[in-house]
Length: 243
Ligand code: ADP
Ligand code: MG
Image 1 (cartoon, rainbow, N blue to C red):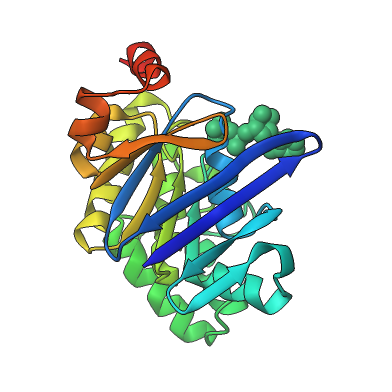
Image 2: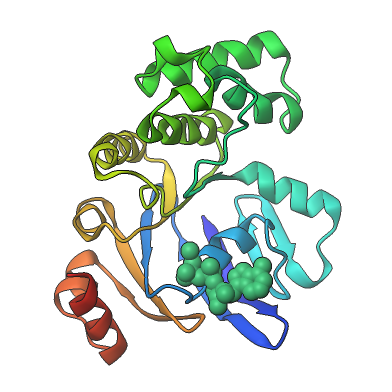
């Protein structure tokens, strides 16, 4: 169970996250939607301290962190409990697909290299990229690169997987294979928090949809409630635009 209370983030004078409260149950899939510039990426980044929140608490499993006085150890524990899939893949260009997946297993988790390598090869097989193990990112399509990005997050075995618009940077031809892989991850009862503009996918995969606007959660509920029977005017306007 993930529990976030009063999560607040300012950049200068701008409050980007304005007291976010969010609970996610084990195995739950939550999709976050909302206009651009509304704090969705910042929310995900604050959850594993890629951005440091100014206030609030974050609890993931046994790890509970008060943002205002988080120690290095707290932050490391939180990072171990979460994994991140980036819009632009964020692979190391000078490492192969296999080495990209091994990296966090060795450096963050301290696993022996041979064990990390076996795990990376297993995950590459699961993502359908076994034959690309020794390819560098530049030799892979956008879809394949993002599948490596997802494989890297899967390999860590984190309690919570965070996806920040994982298909937004892709040519349309590669979107389907990435969404398929995310469906497979979801079938494993992995807890997932996903920012996406793919409304059809949201409808299909989400246990709950959260609509953010202006750094706040404005409305949340089942996909049917939020997408088919929106109540808030801002949500109605947003849905008209993305439809
Ligand atoms: P979204 O993902 O919903 O599009 P973001 O979380 O990326 O929104 O950004 C929310 C707001 O915070 C935007 O106004 C953006 O300009 C601002 N912002 C994000 N990151 C930074 C940063 N590192 N420094 C200053 N402002 C930032
Ligand atoms: Mg964003």
